[in-house]
Length: 89
Image (cartoon, rainbow, N blue to C red; front, side):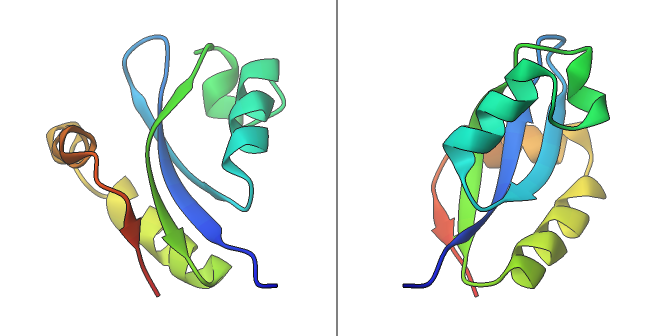
């Protein structure tokens, strides 16, 4: 069975959005909230996942992460507000 890989946006306590990738959304969100996730989120806990997209490969999810990280906060907020799950390549 193939695993999905995910691109996600997490809302931090300070209102910022963190973009990342993972294979298990629930475990990754828990890791962020334990302080063992990304350095960026450690001082901004709690975090809540507010958007995700599923991909068949980690490289595709990471490409999407790199793309979205270049966006303005307003563009990321627009993506979250649409809140549709997108299944990608």
